[in-house]
Image (cartoon, rainbow, N blue to C red; front, side, top):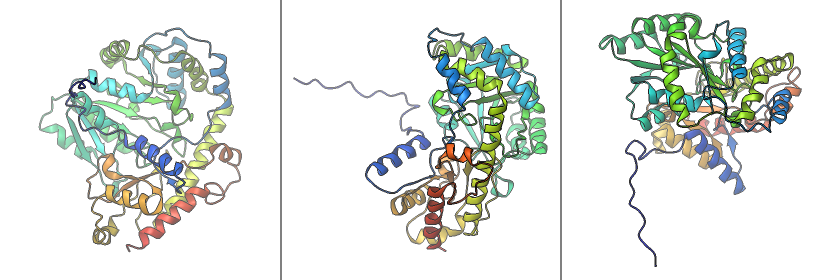
Length: 423
């Protein structure tokens, strides 16, 4: 005898939510490839480079660690992170102001949970900020940016949304080099944004997970200009190739210790502590070494070359895409094809990406997944589908294109040929 199943009673905040767009496209590509279809993967942004050997060896040496570690993180690791911030960014952070978590994504979620205030997100933005806020029930304000301004937040826009209600608590998320655009904030823009944030006592989360992948090695944190109100967020996933290790950190200024303590309480009731072996191995990563510095230098060199190569190829479609400045993303705008695409029943960036994948096997993500208007023909391309281990070995002599990234080289040609039909 079968009994009726329990009724569906979902939290209203999660009803209708879809899986993360970046993870979903990765699974869809895998399914298509398992069917024997040719797929050009420009979807999921996962580092193509291997984790440095000395960091892997440190994990092996600490695999026996099984104890629960302090909620805020291993003391030695927090020391290493504080020294890392000072060495790389010349920002003085004390160990007691560092909080380690199972990925910066989880920490950003918990921050939205414990901080009472409006969430300010420049658009385009990373795909998970807004869904996290929706799960929690947080009010979101999208702030548009412009292609002509490299998609970075204008201080005038931040001032405009704050001045009518100057005492409202606000949390602003800045991510740079950016996912999805690959662009960074120039120093003067950071200074201007810091001035507005200080005026209205906003809290800024500076998501610098791609900071070490600034192609010139000159990442500049807004914490230099607004230290008392900036939380720096980073981790191992992008610069160290260790996304699956799930280790991130927040560093807080002393003025926000009350917020750090609230996060630690929430962490104690959720993830308890980050994996012990991973934390011990992360000490090696954040302490750095000449080999790790060479790894970073070569990673930047390879990513810059591929990013510029693909930009040149796409600009043959006359879309006026600027060269990326860091990370491994491009954010082309195909709006000049809009009228022709509409003749084929394509009215949104989502429809564009679906049709492109269906007809060519090129997998990219629609700008609407990153907070852009659905009818705007922007898309995100992640350029990580190449042999990162081989790339590091030939970093001093390679040539971008078919030699280094043959699949992506072929994929961008397929994309160009398909789009040219709509010229």
